[in-house]
Image 1 (cartoon, rainbow, N blue to C red):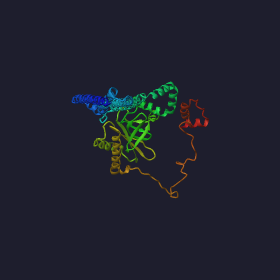
Image 2: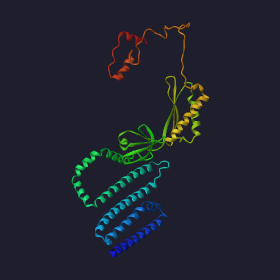
Image 3: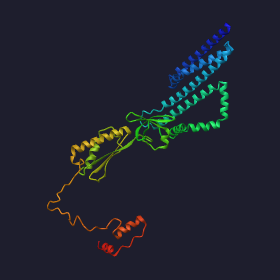
Image 4: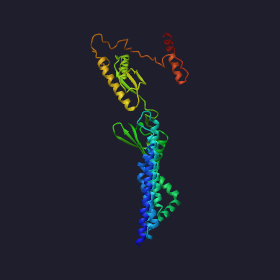
Length: 397
């Protein structure tokens, strides 16, 4: 009896010695390769633990199969070690997926200007990595369960009723599957990428994470907004970095009619020349409206990205307000109220010039032959024949 256990111990020691030699050889080879390239260092860091675990599990399984003295426990230990080998193999495959994606992501940096392609590649690689790891885990669990004879029998019955099971699963998980397919659609349609600046659900922020079920937005005030992937496939949203990060913003001011747009334009030029926030693409000052007692001045400026544009707009707004207050106080918007005494001499409420008691029917589209013709161009109708009174009146005019 002791001879059998001695043989098993010798088999275990020999197997561990072989595993140590293989591990040392692999470590030396990666160390030599890491002097010239970066990927061996990533491979060693990610895959060292699962590789060594797989080696140990394999040598122990071989020792149990060849030299374990107890027949009853041999089958139990063999099945247990088989499950361990499957788990270690899944772990190693998942680590290799992480290595490949890490190497690919290392070639595309997103902390540099003009990083649209890098953000697209990074977003797609992260989704593919999560999907691949999830598939490996599911396959590993299935393979481990299939080592049991009872599970194999259940699996055969499940496969026989796969049609009914798929229908039930589809109905029960339709929202989950919808989010999964929406996440894949978002990533591979290039509609949304990690680090994109978007406006969604009334909030402005940057895309921090995209998963198969939800998208996390890092809002400007350090909050986190989590939205399902289906939101971005069914609801319109603004993507401020779809093709580039450069943006144009507006600053609007309502001022008095005494304002001088030419002087404001000159001061705007001086303000923009002194700041690095402006990217020197566009600088426009226009009067876009002049009603209701105010003159609306609109300033258009450009910046390299959304945060810079926000600060630039605030800077321009503050500089223009300060300048108007200091150099042109008469342009500050005011409300005028004219007060008059109805009993004062010279005040006539029945002034025939300003208060004509006889209303007139003259208008843009009525009251004259020319107005009627103008109206007919919009209605495609034949002009109505005027009465003698209107015709005589039009002739006099």
